[in-house]
Image 1: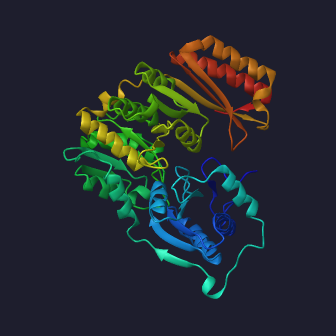
Image 2: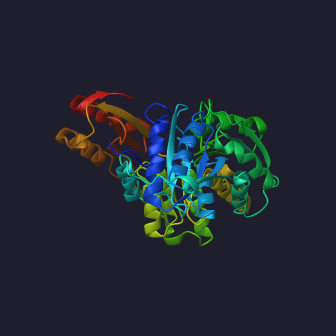
Image 3: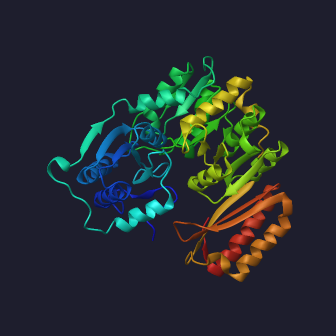
Length: 444
């Protein structure tokens, strides 16, 4: 099984993602990327396992003669930005929105972009080698500190604001994660009145009942404080879910939609195209189509969104989960950059977020999992293929069916969108029944 997934390497810290494995990964990465002593900028979120894995990476880099630049607790996109700024490779230690016990590694090139599949495969192929460079004496690598990493990143994001945010009342849910080091100074720098919640760097509570996976928390805070907008980040702040002044959730689809319409109106949406995944709601596609904007879909994973954006020369793309890429400003999904772009639209137009998001409708969506006996060829069974084709025929252009195997576990994910919620539920139930009887046991 391939070690690298669609978003780096992840696992249970000190379980399957051990310090020993991370040490070997660090040595392999240093060897593949540069045999002459590479420079790596290391950032991490607040997880309890972060310092342990960081220590393993620092030792690995130094053991190959490289330089480890420790940036401390910063968002994953900050690691990508700062790596590019100091001409180093980037290493972010985080499991994003995953539970506390998980952790992971994301690698970036010196250009700030995630490493291509071929480079990740070369790193994996190098893991088992025992002949990698081990300098001694003056050849051993060094460690540098970057105490102003958070400040440098805040300055970069703040420069993207089109005007002062004075008069804007903002609530930010930091999810006890990496946003705790940057959210408050960013919005204060922009002149907003800011209320931060879950804003202590607590690696035991990161993502627990808060942040982008629990937007109801920030929605309640927005209403309590009479705020204009709320932003909920995940553990490493590479994504954001917004909340309007009424407490309504504005997800990644709605964010892409309102920003795309604003960019197009200002002649800043190249090709009149937005790139999203197959999981983005049909409501986004319909809303964009009314404005002459095409929605280009890719497989799930921000790396595939980014690759297609670069192929098309697109400026905007992302995922429903709030992982949004503004390619003119960042090389990866960035929750704080996205939040500032949303605020830019609000400030430039003088409109409330609820008004801006209103044109992006949302078709009722049913998403369920079906546990199966194995992933290989799961969707090739004639009964399954017939059931999916029948559901698509019955919906026609009134909805959408997506049935796909998970890339990480033995389940098939069934998604049905339709104008009518009852019809979506009924069709999803039929598909789940067929897949369950044919391939395994249903699990919702």
